[in-house]
Length: 121
Image (tube, rainbow, N blue to C red; front, side):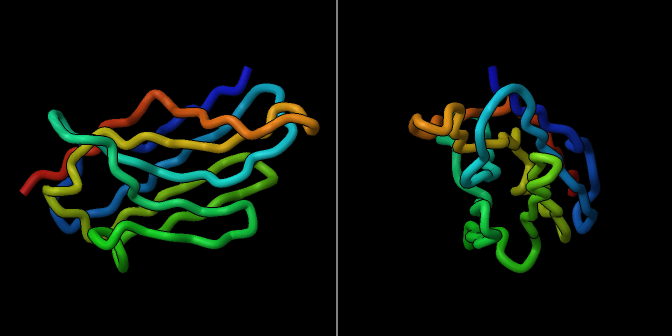
């Protein structure tokens, strides 16, 4: 069974930085795209950033220039470096990965449990 475990959330003042990590564990063949999403109460979950296995990145307009997504394929881990944080970045951040469990099978999407990021003004 594949499991994604996030860490690194917390409380920070506006203008500060946090680094989120998400590690994949369990039995699987490969990890394809990985990404970070966030959600606030009453709103839909939204894309923050994604990265392909080859390192191609895309970002939500609201975080461009402030957040950086990266991954360590050897460690099956994806990171989100968040700088110049704003109160509107406050949300639960979820890790997502498209996982090929069996080399002969399709990919499946997995989610982490979420980590709270709170930015105070």
